[in-house]
Length: 352
Image (cartoon, rainbow, N blue to C red; front, side, top):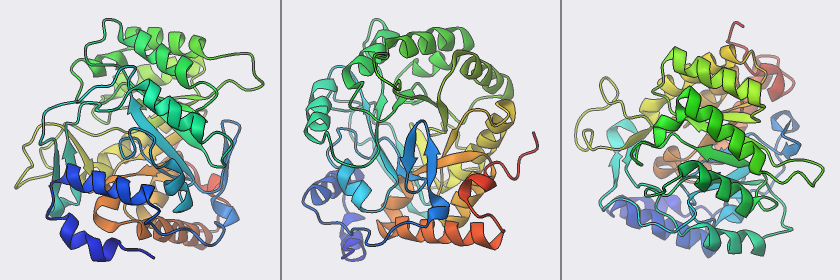
C-alpha cells in the first residue's frame, strides 16, 4: 500500500530534512509499496559486468548511510546508490540546509556531505552481503582532509568487495574547492590513484564511475572525456546539482546557496549528457540524472546517450508510485518508436 498520498500534506509542513529522516525511518520499518511484477525485458541492461532489471536507480544523497537500499530495490528500482560517504563522520553544514521550491518542482540543498563515515556504512553493507540487487557506493572526501584524493582511495579500499560499483563524487558544490578536482591535471591524478586502489585479485575489478557537474563548459567536458577514455574509467554520471539560478528558478528560497536539483535541472543536465555522449563517441556508459519526473523525461535521457538513469528530487513531490509509472511509460515509448530494447535507443538523438 502506498501511504504517500496520505502522508504528503503533513510532510510538506515539516522541515525538509525532518521529513526526509521520517521517510528513511518508514522505509526501515517496511512502510513502502513493493513491486509485484517483473519488469519488461525491454528495460533490462547489462553493463559493467552487472545485470540491471531496469535502468532506473535511486541517486546518491537519498540514503547517505546505506540504511534502506533493499527497501528501494524492493520498490522497483533497478539499482541503489548509497552515500556520499566520507572516511570520517561529519555533520555537514548548519541547518536549515534543504529548501523546497514546489512551484518549480525543485530542491536546493547545501548539506555538505553529512554522513556517518566509512565504518558505519561498512557494517551495514557487510550485514546485507549475499542479498540480491545492485548497490553502488558514492565516495567523497572530508571537508578538512589534507589529501582529498587519499580520502577517495580510502573509500575504494574500504568498500571494495562490498560495492557493486563506485561513484567518485567530485562535483558537489557544497564542499569548498571540491569541484576543482574536475580540472584536467587534478582529474588525471585522481582517476589514476583511484583505479590503482582497486583490488585486482578477483575476476572483475569493481567498476568506477565519475559524477560531474552540469556547470562545465565544452572544453572542460572535452578534458574529462579525454581523461576518462585514456585511463579506462568505467562510466560517467551526468549530472550533480547546479549552482546556476538565472532563468531557472525564482521566488521563495530561490536565492538560497547550494545545489539546485529537480525539474529546472532537466534541460541543462540533458544537454551536458548529449555533449558527453558525442565527446566519448558512445564508448563510455553514461548515467543520466537531473530533473527526471516522467517516462518522457527518462526516454529523453536515453535518447541523449544515457544507458542508466537516476532520480531523487521528483520522489519528494510524487512519492514511490512514480517509479512504476516511469518504467511503464518508458517501455511504452520504446515500443511506440519501434525499439525492441532500451539499448537500441541510446543516443538516438545525438549525431556522432
